Image (cartoon, rainbow over all chains, first blue to last red; front, side, top):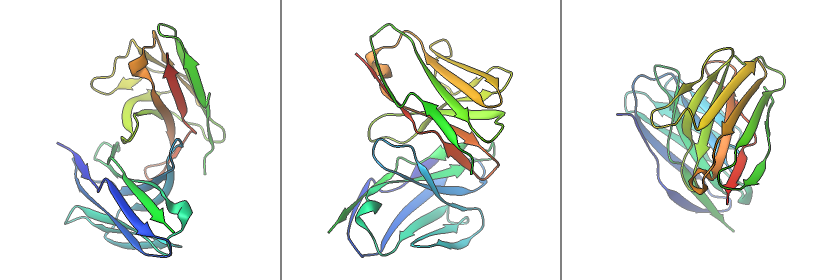
Length: 109
Length: 114
């Protein structure tokens, strides 16, 4: 079956660096997405990786290793507004998105 | 990026009534739209793929007679929850794929059935 695993919850301090991991097992692979979702709101797109390596976009970076079925989202200079759920999703061979359950990030002052 | 408008943002309805949720792609012609449901503290679950001019494709376990999807134009898809029950209370979100690598989401609809 298809499976996306990510930690349920993480806590970090304002200004810190946080790494949210995601491992996946899917039928084919056409890219991995990270989305941010604040409570009660729709997800917003953060990043897309299809090739191995690190993609940097401001305070957010995303890494992919296809051979290991592994990705992480790195948040630098953590801010209070970064408190949200972070969803990892993989696009399978049918171009369908398979979603992880999300990681709730709690930022403390 | 594409702008997706979903309406209403929230709705409360009585058990047994029907509720229609609209998803509009404002600046992109969408032959396909996705409908998701999200229960509290859970991830998005794909309910169905809406196809313009043809029948929607439903995921396993989703009742097509209960969740009616109509995609009559390239800019509008509707989801109607028929004979709603309290267990249908959830957050419903549509998304418009604009290519193989990107999809844009509507604002979501919070449905509460009392």
